[in-house]
Figure (cartoon, one colour):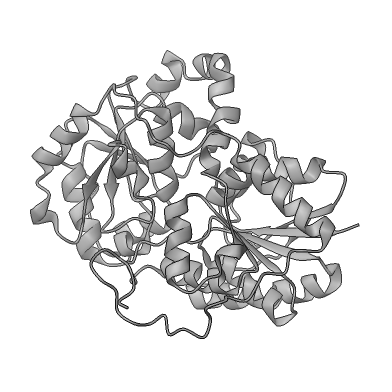
Length: 395
């Protein structure tokens, strides 16, 4: 039976892949193995999401950890390689743009076809390790599942063969349909008055904040700018903070503003209950800004650049660049955010069937033996030449 192995490593991976995992697990035409790299390993970073999303536990745990990105990537590659040699999958599937996707190098070394889910996103912010990772795996992949035609065009401009790219729409719409919109009665009961009072909050009278990206927290200036901004919020801020962010606040001796309540990371059910009843989200997360657009909640995007511009296109997100705080006065930022409160957004992210499209295409390719990608027909062309302002190559 054809064998598919999916390797994930962080909690957003579990969220986006949740419907895919269920569909692959239930499929009778393939053998499916779920592998967990170990990049996230604490209960509130991994196991609570498995429980909340009703997922099966991973079949294989790599336990790949390290004190730096280099150590984690090296550990993922070295630990995944013998697993792939033992399992002998017909295809190795990865999702996203984290240290874990660099496991694609192990698959490539063994000549195992590589599939990348959520491919061809580009922020064009080369400071981000994620930008480098997604570029590497896209150019190693035999099949790329991407969300939109504009993402596909970005890949074609880099010399990627369009025959290897499948547009499926955004997976997050599927996830929210299944785990939130179809369970409104359950959430109405869960997000009770007591739920908010236990957290010192009032429904619709707080912002939910997340902040974890390296460019946000690995040096004092942007992190201080972010704290200076949220200190001027007209509403209380509830901040489930990653452990790295908590440590950096301590390392840099940055005080938490008095209007901010910081707690440890939370599960997905609690996150959705808070998001759906907040005035908005203050975040540097790619996933959260898409979730808020679908939920009809505005977001303040704390990023210089984003690989998910649709949230700006639909008007659900307001920008704040922590590297240039003087260009984004807090009073104006929060005034813009408040104007979006109560609106619904024509997000255009998808119809809720992206996971089904992906699984149908992937299983068909694996069963028919057509996973191996095509070499780019224009691979002899120098794609490093300059581009015009409209993004098209100079003739």
